[in-house]
Picture 1 (spheres, one colour):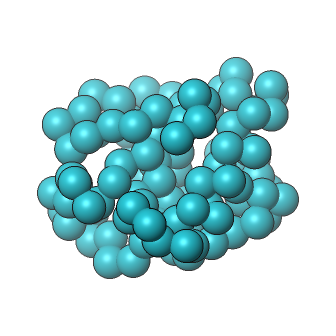
Picture 2: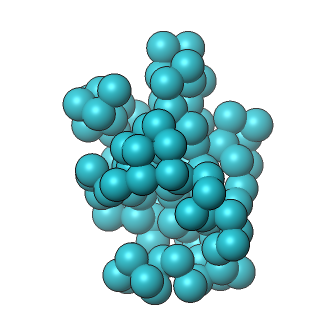
Picture 3: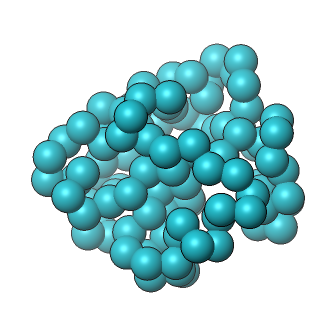
Amino acid sequence: MPATIELIHDQDYAAATKDGVVVVDFRMDFCPACIRMDHTLSQVAQDPAVAAKVRFLSLSVNQDFHVAEALGVQSAPSVIVKKDGHIVDAVVGYQPPEAFLARLQHHL
């Protein structure tokens, strides 16, 4: 996982997503679409304007599935955007960087 995306676990989720704009990537290890989405998120996270306003997190549902289960996540990759603790957007499946960035900008 690139340095701009922080790996978290179920027990970290609530505290890590309570403030500001946070992108959470629910992923599975060795999932081709998840790996492609990792590249999308890495590219978006490296944009200085985005990096200054957004925290990027990744939660592997292979290891930690309780939060994903509680949120009704059924497919990987699934990416949610939270703003001040509330889910404001969700994407299921791969998105190219330009498309994801356009969605994210609505919440900045």
